[in-house]
Amino acid sequence: MKLAVMQPYFFPYIGYWQLMNAVDKFVVYDNIQYTKSGWIRRNRILLNNSDKLISLPIKNDSDFLDIRDRFISENFYIKEKNKIKNLIKESYRKAPYYEVVKPLIDKILDQNENNLFRFLYNSIIFLKEYLNINTEIIISSSIDMDHSLKNKDRVIEICKKLNANHYINPIGGTKLYNKEEFARHNIKLNFLKTDDIKYQQFGDEFIPNLSIIDVMMFNSREKIQELLEQYTLQ
Image 1 (cartoon, rainbow, N blue to C red):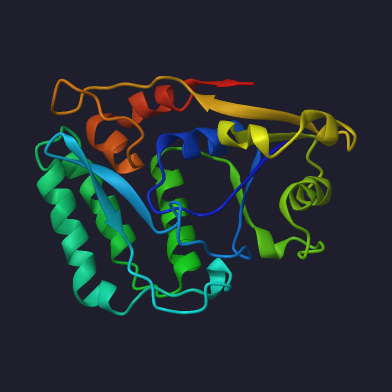
Image 2 (tube, helix red, strand yellow):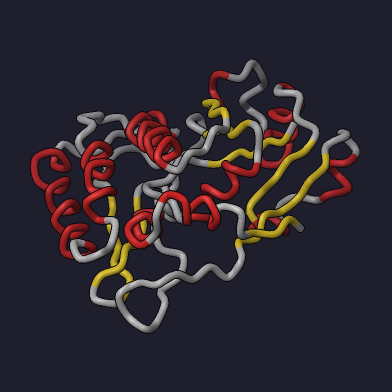
């Protein structure tokens, strides 16, 4: 059984969905410390042939809280949500699949969910359905295990608890995880590397690694199915 484990992200790029599509079960961390850096609450879209950051405003709180204990700022539903909607409209209103994708974007942004993890988790579920990904999604805290474990020990224990014999990680984890160490626990380890994916955007120069929003705006669901397979395992 193939398994992947990831944090939740805000409209993550296509490599996230390739990883989800490549495994049987996909664990989403909720009981892991929230980090300011990275893509948990933000991502990039295309605006005027350049990349533009969009982000969820987060309530000020302790930097040591888990993702599930962080909350979206009340200002998001008062003002920031419509700013993001308008920015997406400005960016993609002339894209070929804008009218198809807009209801999904609105559904995600209109959740009225203040908990950061639940908002992101719901978003992931909505998006995976649109992308026709059938992988089972599991919330990490629901697994009966020692949740004080860290890093590779935590991942290996998750694999054991879910009876996974094949763990797949994004290519960025090559310095974190060792194939021999996983093999000692009878777990095969591979790293997923996204191919050099390109598709027609508005301009001549392709801007890579943007949010899945960009992929959906310029590609049919059938074409996205093809893009989900464009990777190599190392």
